[in-house]
Image 1 (cartoon, chains in turn cyan, green):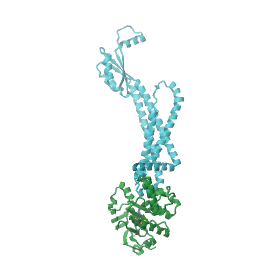
Image 2 (tube, protein in one colour):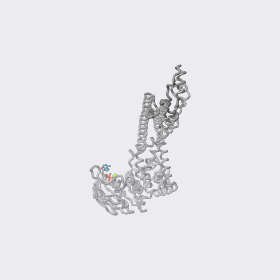
Image 3 (cartoon, chains in turn blue, red):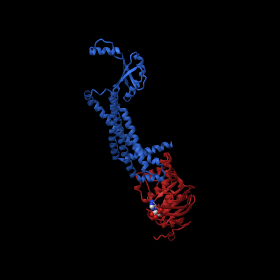
Image 4 (cartoon, helix red, strand yellow):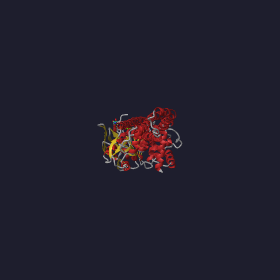
Length: 289
Length: 232
Ligand SMILES: Nc1ncnc2c1ncn2[C@@H]1O[C@H](COP(=O)(O)OP(=O)(O)O)[C@@H](O)[C@H]1O
Ligand SMILES: [Mg+2]
């Protein structure tokens, strides 16, 4: 009961602090909302790009040519047990030969083609690794795989990841700075009150708690604004832009859009956490009680 | 209740208190006098742990408060009532809220708060000013709010550092008499002042400081200007 009353006291103080903030609340929330909107946009973009890349990657195939005399189905079973293997398709030499004969009008020779497995992977990273593993299989004569493409796709994906991390770090730092400076100003304007509280024997966390909550509220509110903006932009793009882009970019696989809900959850939790963290750090630094 | 043992305090090499030994018993009422710069506020700040002595011990209720860690300082201060020359009221809060503040921060329930705040305001004769804001009050009234706030949590010790420094002589006397009344309820009261009028009016224990050294300690004393080398 007593703890609850103390918490409600902290909440009341937070409310009073926010009310006293007046227009500066809006300023802080606007600045943070811009930062978080950029962050959310970049997050969406990198996630979408990653999905595009991995869907391209999943179209990459390794072809394994079997030695004569091995039963393709049992080899396929063995291969499908390997890690990172998503799908194994058997192309029997008879089928391949028929197709070839139709395509090239080749003479009726003895079928020179091997049985073939087309192997799709769950993960572009593992093209080379899996190919090497396949080469060690006795029943496999020869393996062919698009190594350069796989390497380039990987490089591209790592670049996107690094860019995402860099943008996240930069915007987190910017958010921390904005929150930190704001709370520092609040502390300066209240230094007399804080001194009085401390002289009365008020607990340090009762003094700092409202400031930490205030930072959290700023972060949360900004994240809500950012969420609304991103949502609106996405809705607009879905209506007017994507329709035109699809025609232009046949390479873009369908269903690569990264869901917005995870972005929003990340935004809201990151905004709140950074808001609270920034003000906790500043309070700890500038309030010595 | 209050004990200073061989207390030495310097600020960056300049001594402010030199080898001060002092004892004030439970329920006692004492003035701490001396000209400006004598070290009165330093003694007070040592007692509420705003400062630590360079050497020596400061005991309150038998506890050496120089050894308290930072987390324990609020616990000490809740057991002290502190009254300041500049009142130190929260100017955006009403009289009632000022007095109630520490109780709310401690999670006391509202009915109990109302009861205790009203009784504290009653002691200082401000029971009808609860809804006023500090800037609507006279200096004497503001200081009485400060006193009500200091006693609301029932502290065994009340420290007042120049509580009448900003007040006219008549109001000053009222304030000091109020503090004397509070000491009669069993609270140990230490008042620092350089106002000889109030000291001489009450004729209580007078502890004199001169250049950071103890220069006199008399029961039923007066403000001895010569002993402390004060000229005005
Ligand atoms: N924070 C401080 N830093 C440096 N010197 C101080 C500080 N506080 C007090 N002093 C010095 O210590 C001496 C005693 O000061 P103080 O205790 O405030 O005296 P009083 O309250 O009797 O006027 C004075 O010489 C004063 O200049
Ligand atoms: Mg002083």
